[in-house]
Image 1 (cartoon, rainbow, N blue to C red):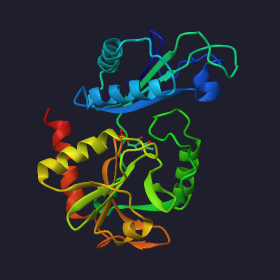
Image 2 (cartoon, helix red, strand yellow):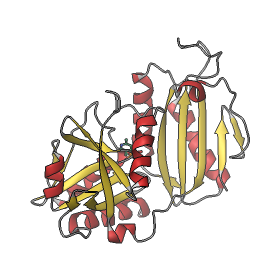
Image 3 (cartoon, rainbow, N blue to C red):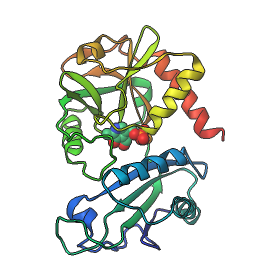
Amino acid sequence: MSLAYFNGRYVALDEPVLPIEERGHQFGDGVYEFLRVYGGRPFMLEEHMDRLYRSAALIRLEIQMSREELTDTVYELIRRSGLADSDIYLQVTRGIAPRNHPFPTTPPSVTMTIKPSYTLPPKLRDTGAEVLLLPDERWMNCHIKSLNLLPNLLAKQTAVEQSCFEAVFVRDGMVTEGSSSNVYLVRDDAIQTHPLSNLILGGIVRQAVRRMADAAGIPFVEEAFTPAQLLEADEVFLTSSGIEVVPVVKVRGEGIIGSGSPGPVSQELHRRYSALTTAR
Ligand SMILES: Cc1ncc(COP(=O)(O)O)c(C=O)c1O
């Protein structure tokens, strides 16, 4: 069953536990992680924990729970839920304090939720997705997994209203990433994606793609590309913990990518990713 955790208590997901003066609610003053559980085991948990503590440090938020305590809580949540395949959100905020911009001295809040895994629209992986290119209007710290997602939400909503699966951001003439995913192209049998910088979130699945590419002998090139290069690519695909590897076959109003069907590299990467998530 779905469950939540808030500052030491395990509660039903719909139980109202969050005080109004919680800074996550008032300001989006916090960071988060999303991770997936396969067969009762959280996938790449260490990497998610690394990124959570890194994001927190970058907003000058000290997570007072140790990494071991947080990890134990994740496992306890999984155990109590009884779910084999699930999605976990983990938020750490600057805590509960009267609304005022400067940082309070109150301890941070830790929230987690667990729910059955999200499933992609049926057949999407077979048919491939359509994306919409939009200007990247986010701030200059996109490497922080911050709770502030308004530009991402607005972009995703615009994409969905145009029947597209994802919005792909373009900043200064270069493709950065999706509103909730990393973006890659395949050209001449090499995978290319935006380098790690303040302009993108360093995805955990991006790390897995890099390892899978190394194992398969496919060059992994970290170099930004233009929308024109995206359109001329042999293949394009998106990754995130929620969607895994999704091929992109169309760019709204611009044209078709490659043959218009999911390409062999994207498909091979998804096969390898499924093997990683199941065979542990
Ligand atoms: C903006 C953005 N980029 C990339 C990703 C992919 O990250 P990960 O592979 O860790 O899920 C996400 C995931 O939600 C995201 O929100």
